[in-house]
Length: 163
Image (tube, rainbow, N blue to C red; front, top):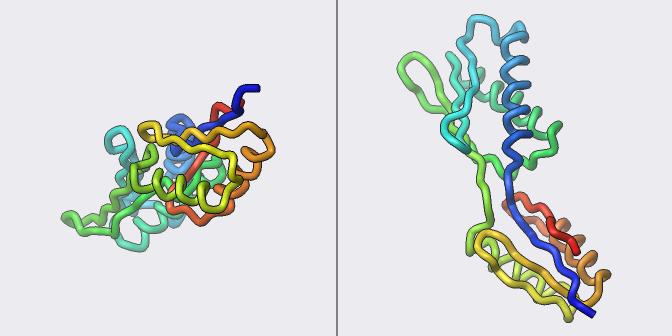
């Protein structure tokens, strides 16, 4: 019998992130507390977000609105990194960016977690920016998924190619 396997990845669903951003833009345009504050949020490159407002509190409030929309769209906040508000002329700006992929350090951390606490028959391979986990028993794979979901990792994970 062939081994069953699945991949552990950290990918951003760009369409859902775009939908969340568009919803945040609509809410900011409609809310009374954002009227005449110059508050805006927009894409800055492929994975970057730029937030602008006339005060620190307003810029942070825009970020909170965006985070709310991300949560409602099922995107983990662990995939969003934001900087501190910075003064830019008379406006305040916040830069944020999404992380995509699992780097070597994070992959080693997850691999070690599975080897130490997971079922004995499971094998883990690091393949670029994702991990392939395989085992003879499907129950072991279910146990590993539960283990990784329960672990307090500092990045978002998804499970794909379960076969």
